Amino acid sequence: MSQTIGALTFVVPDYDEAIAYFTETLGFRLIEDRPLGDSKRWVQVAPAGGGVRLLLAKAAGDAQAARVGNQTGGRVFLFLHTDDFWRDHEAFVAKGVRFLEAPRDEAYGWVAVFADRWGNKWDLLQLRDGGGQGG
Image (cartoon, rainbow, N blue to C red; front, side, top):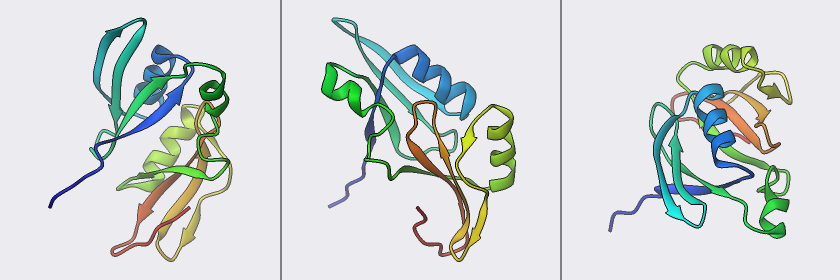
């Protein structure tokens, strides 16, 4: 049996705002933006180097809106792997990304936690060969 996780749902307040953030600030690619009717859209973005796609889902109702920016109860939500930590760290800082800590050199690689525009926590992570988990 061969299985992969193809996408994760990422709840956002607005499709266009989220597309702009992911593509212009984080450098992701817009994979698909398809209308579904009733003002719903099928929107997927992914890091430029590939990997799991994020399915951007506009919050529907109060319960979902309450999760925007806190999709994991305050824990690091996603791990953005890079082949050049310092290049991406500097580029993100220049684009206004808010890092919650100074970069640190861990046994598994270079890492720093940042908050996306809604408050979700991410690890920017460059793993050493055979690296660990981070977060």
